[in-house]
Amino acid sequence: MVLILYGTETSPPVRAVLLTLRAMQLDYTFHQLDMQSGEHLDPAYLQKNPQHTIPMLEDDGGKYIWDSHAICGYLVNQYGQQPDGDLLYPKEPLQRAVVDQRLHFESGILFHTCFKQLQKLVFRENVTELPKEQIVELNEAYALLEQFLNDHSFMAGDHLTIADFSLVSTLSTLHLSYAPIQASKYPKLSSWLGRLSALPYYEEANLRGARQLADRVRAKLPKQFDKLWQKAFEDIKSGAGKQ
Ligand SMILES: N[C@@H](CCC(=O)N[C@@H](CS)C(=O)NCC(=O)O)C(=O)O
Image 1 (cartoon, rainbow, N blue to C red):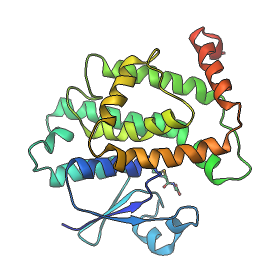
Image 2: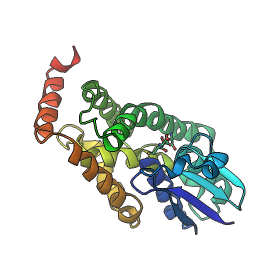
Image 3: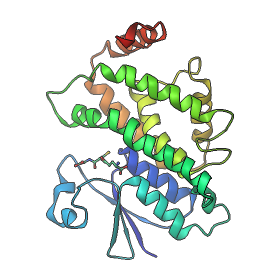
């Protein structure tokens, strides 16, 4: 097995894969792709991944897989012989369905809502704002995640799965950049973030890149953004933000 991960550690979906690789203690090479200079649009990369996204995983020279959710599932399916390897993506149909639902939530709701705008904010000079609808949408997403946790320690039950890795890659970025997960409002989500942060490989595989991206996001936002955001969250609490 020769695994090569293409990407940059600021990218949340790349960090979801890094967390999975580290949790499974797999050996891999990290191939740094500079998106600012358009390396992901290079014809050689496009030939491997016509969707030109990161992360992309190359396995055994010639097998290419992209989309972090597909990659994380593949890694556990293919290489999950470690004692708790399978638990990261359980085989039991109901448990797996819960993990899949969380993964689709990350992909279809959380990432989709925020990251296209964040990409524009970071990469386009003339973009210095985030759409106001995000405030309501993110608030709804956080409230749902709080409910997903229910009485569990992790997103899909009582043990760590790739759903935790996928969600924390996006949530930690939002938390550090402009939408903090307040313990008073989302106590379970906040404790969950603390639990993930305590993983021995968390800082290298996720926090470092999340901080870098958050710094870039915050540098583009107006100084008063935090106050505006806080006020908007308060309005939602009283129902005023819904109109
Ligand atoms: N759902 C995808 C999202 C991948 C994605 O959009 N990645 C961004 C970087 S965070 C990207 O590659 N953008 C460049 C592009 O779309 O051309 C995944 O989970 O892998």
